[in-house]
Image (tube, rainbow, N blue to C red; front, top):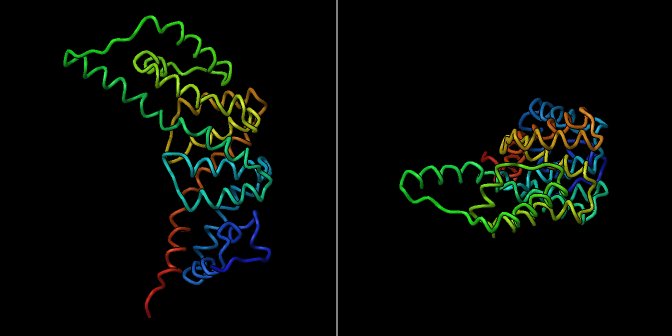
Length: 250
């Protein structure tokens, strides 16, 4: 791999995003018009000044590292770029722990289905009333750390108390001990809840409300939406890399 050490190897250009002269040349030579259109689409979302380069890269890292995406190529790319933009390793770990619980969102639909089918089969589960005090304490801890409550968590807490306790721990860890500000972490949550691989309106609304409460403005949030749309370029970038490894035969 030949890495461009010139002006294109930076945070501000599409060629710098690719960071490989061979891939850039392959994509440009194959279709210059397509390359310029892709570059323009990427630039519009990344060149505005509403979010810092550090914040953009951390949000993109979150989008690609979340369990609904797991794009290994993009994870490595945006981890490197986040560091280059001034993010610390503590910032990066903060992001990666913040997005862990996104996989739990699927249970908000799965648990009610189980309950309905169990009831139909006459095999209803039971919850332990003695856990109510522990649940209320965990709920208040979550609200204190996160600033909101999702009622869908209540059924999980009552049916799977040990799981809920662990979920509550991982869901609040970065909010208690992480290096990002509360507004920055809300931006990360907005990012993962607005992507094509994980559109979660309920969470998105809560995190937009919280971000605005922490001083965010609509232009910052609109830029997050635009960053989410750049995930559409990933197939183009991945294929460009594959084309350089497996060039067309003459």
